[in-house]
Every structure is written in structure tokens, then in C-alpha cells.
Amino acid sequence: MCGSDTEEVPLTPPGDAYPAVGSSIETLRATVDAAYGQGVGANFLPEDKLILFNSIPFEDRAIEVVADGRILGRTFYGPSSRSWAFKPTIQGASRLAQLSERKRIQADGGAVGPILRGGSLLAAGILSADESIQPGDEVSVADPEGRVFSVGSARMSGREMLEHRRGMAAKIREAGHPQEQSILPGGQSWDDAARANEEVLKKREEEAINFVRRVSLSYDIPKSVAFSGGKDSLCTLLVVAKAIKDFKVLFVDTGIEFPETLSYTELVLERMGLKDRLVSKSVGERFWQAMKIFGPPARDARWCCKVCKLGPTTSLIQEAFGGDCLTFVGQRKYESQQRFGRGRISHNPWVPGQVAASPIRSWTALHVWLYAIREKAEMNPLYYRGYGRIGCMVCPSGEMAEFHLLERTHPETAKRFLSDIEAHGQRNDMPDDWLRLGLWRWRQLPPWTGEKMREFNDPFASTEQVVFQEWRTDSGMVLDAQLGECDRLRVANALNALGRVDDRNGRIFTTHSGIPMEVTAEGRMVLGPCQNRDLLWEVGRKAAYCMVKARYCVGCGTCVGSCHRKAIEIIDGKSWIGGECTHCASCTKLCPVLTWAVREPVNPFG
Ligand code: SF4
Ligand code: SF4
Image (spheres, rainbow, N blue to C red):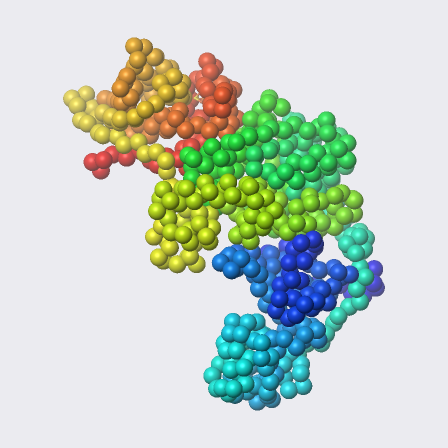
């Protein structure tokens, strides 16, 4: 559009840049103001320029900032201080030096060479320094001609640098020859950017539309689009609506959706004339109830997705389509390592019956934004309120920056969530930092949390453990477990998965793999006798799982889709096996309760 050549920007991988809009860029300007003086942020990152953010790996939220095709710096969130810190690159620091005297040190000619070779800035090599510098501050170092050639972190105050004349004044992070400033004229809008990239967007759209048509012809099952309220699902919906006529829009309200997302979903479907295509399901309070069983959701124990999203999606597919369906999803390979490795067509074991196909798999976030702008499609307003990704309000994948933002934007939900987590922490004697630093987001804490903290790993690995005692009799081995209080009707129903159940005189009998089992009126489970110890334990494990499912089922619906006989229904929020059951035990394989609320049954005698 401007007639000049394009230039590649060496973004930090995975390199999924997106427009810096709304309160995110305002927060960054305020961070720059706090360090360099009032009004500097607005001049450094002017409103009439297109500024990009690129999320980069860090312990919490961290963003690379790009303008004029240059990386100007990186901003990092500190969960303890609840604040952001901006660390400019040499390019960014050079620009800041034109706007503010603050945080600047001038080195003498003799100090330049050693710094360029990787050394630190010593106080002896300083000509002048901003006296407001404090230890730990980000500083830029200029040569005797005033050209910034390095950036780093102060190790002493500005006054000490001038008075002491010895010791390390600043640890240098990046050094290089002074860079030419390439401050381009402003005045561009994101509409201009979309127009400038029309050819690219057109090609992406054509390819995605062809993909949707091709896949739709290959799968002779009902078609749908999974809509979540995020930008990726929006673009998928836009593409699918252009490609095919006959499809539904699936939306699962996890019960912890942002209210903005619920109204935005209505708005998008209304504007696109797709309201009558919506098939949706709401799971109400399930997340909060399930947290009592599973403990806090964690990155390595994401029961929440299964219980509140994937299971209900399985049920929804059953209800809407009576079986299988092809769903177009907005998954992109740049979103995560896991998604990078996934094919364009995939099957999630937690959503049996669904074939997921991703038309925009190789699009970057910038393609997605520009495409939505080109299509004049409105984005979820939450993107303008500082949220980088739109999902559930409380998600263990979120950074503390997002949780602290939630405390400001949706204080009631944040308060409810934190008080539930705090109660779990107190019950398990977790230290204050576990809550304060959001360490509940892991069962196995990551290395950066330190060895002392990792002693607290895995506090909620299981709710239930079935302990079998093993006996030898003349006819073989017997397993025996005391089950405690249980709903006999539900236990009898759950055991149907293993064999035909006979419920008489307060005793429940069944047989699986030739092994008899009984649940006594007193709540004891006895299996055997059996000569094959391994087989006995295998059946014992399945029986224990049935018992735990009977007690803790959260009604997610995953097992509904895994039953080829369609024998399972969710009644009063819990699964119920009907008369069509053939006792194949398939439904004892995939259930969040079995994955996250029960450990392997144990033998107390080893
Ligand atoms: S998967 Fe269906 S048929 Fe098989 S045991 Fe479970 S309910 Fe019965
Ligand atoms: S038994 Fe079925 S409905 Fe209940 S938690 Fe397990 S998979 Fe979900």
C-alpha cells in the first residue's frame, strides 16, 4: 500500500502476533509512563500507529511489543507485585531516549568496547546517570555521543553510580552498535492493514473454503461449527458459512462463561442470520459442584474441560444429531505445542462421535484478526478489556495476570473461585504462596517454584481410594473391600457395566470374566474366588471404578457417547445405565471421575 518492500520481523517463537488494542495497550502506555514520565507512553506507542503484541514464554504473562516493523521491547507481569515491567530493546530504548531523560546512563568511550564484548557497565566508566535510577530499574546506556547502544538492569542507584565510581553499575542484557531510528509516519488503521493484506487473506479464505467443502463431501454425517465466542471460532464460522449451507452452530455454556461472551454469541448469530442454527447446552453449576470432588482444576489435571465442555458436547451431539457429526473447529497450530502436532482432522477420545476439522489450522492470530476486520465481523469485547484469549472465566491455563484482571472486571466470580480454592488449601495445609502465586494451577509444581514448594505437590490427586484385602481360600483368591456409605440403587446400576445384576435381599450380585462378585448389605464388596490373581485384580479394579462412579458421577455425559448401544442417559445430573446394556464395560474406560478422583485400588498387604 505504501509501496515499500515488506520486512520480516524476527518474533520470539512461536510468533503468533496480534493487534494491541483496548486496555492492553493502555496498560502498557501506563507502565512506560511510570518508568519514563507522564505522557511518554502515548508518544512512544502512538494511537495512530499499528502496534502488535506477541505472547512469549515466561512464568507468567509476557508480551513482545512491535511497531514500525521493529521489536521495541518486552513487557512482563509480576504476580507478586501485581504489576507490569517494560524492558526495552536497544531500538525501543533509543526511541525512549528521544522522549525522556529518565533511566539513562552515559558511558565513557573506554566502556563501550567491553560492553559490546559482553561485559557489564562498571561505575568507573560512567560519564553521567539519571539520579532517579534505583537498583533493579531498567536502564539504557548511551555512548559519549549520546547514542543508545545497550540496555540492562541497574545494580546501584543513579546517585551511587556517580558517587562511588567503583563496582558493577548495571548488568547488561543486550548490547549492539547504535541502531538507526526508523520511525515511520503514523496514520494507519487496522482497516488499512486488512486492505493491504487483501491478497493474502483472499488466498487463505479460498483454501479454507475448499477444505470445508472437501471434508464435508468426505463425511456423510451432520455438519456443525463449534462456537466459543473467541476470534478463532468466529473466523471458522465466517468461512464455513461461505462454504456450505447446511450446518448447525454448537455452543456449550460451561457455567463459567463470561457474561460478555454469552451476549456476544447471540449478537454474532443474529447478525449472521444464524440464530435458528444454534444448538446449545448449559451445564449450570456443575463446575462449582465438581470442584468439591476433584479439587481445583490444574494444567496437569484439566478435569474442567472434560466435565464442563467435552462431556456436554458429547451429550449435545447425541441429542442434536443422534450420533456422529463433523464439527469445524477454530484450532490453530500456533496456539500451543499440543495443537502444533495435531492434524487438520482429529478425533478427541473425550468426544466420541465427533470428527473435528480445522479450516484455519495454519492461520496466525494476525490472519484471524485481519480476516475478521475484512469481513466487518465484530470481535468479542473482552479482547478490548485486556483478555488475550477468550475461554472460561477461571481456567488453570490462565496466567496470574488474567486472574488479577478477572478480580477487577468480574470480582464476584473471582471471589467465589478464590474462596473455594482457599478452603481446599486450608484443608490440605498448603502455604500462603500456594494461593497467592496461583500454584494451585499445577498438581506437580514446575521447577521454577523451587524445591521447598514442590514438597506440596499433588495435594488433591484423588478423592477416593478403594483398599482391597486379599485372601486365599481352597477355591482361589478373594478380594474384599469395605466401601462405606453408598447409594445401593446407583451401585447396582453402575455394576451393570460388568455383568447382569441381581439385586435381592439387600445384596447385589453380578459376574464379570467368570468372577463372581457381591456387594453385601453392610457395604462390603467381595470378588472371587479365582485362581488367576492378575485377572482377579483386573476385575477388582473395574468393580472399584464402578463403585466410585456411582458415588461421584458429575453427569458430564462422556460415557453417553462412548456406549455403542446408547444405553446410558443422564438422569438428575448423573449417568444411568438402561436395559439395552450388553455389559461390555466400555464405559468404565473414559470418565473424569476415574481419571482424577480415584487412585488405583490398593492391597494393604502389598
Ligand atoms: S458401554 Fe453401554 S453397553 Fe457397554 S457396559 Fe456401558 S452401558 Fe453397557
Ligand atoms: S459416569 Fe459418565 S456422566 Fe458420570 S462422570 Fe463419568 S463419564 Fe461423566
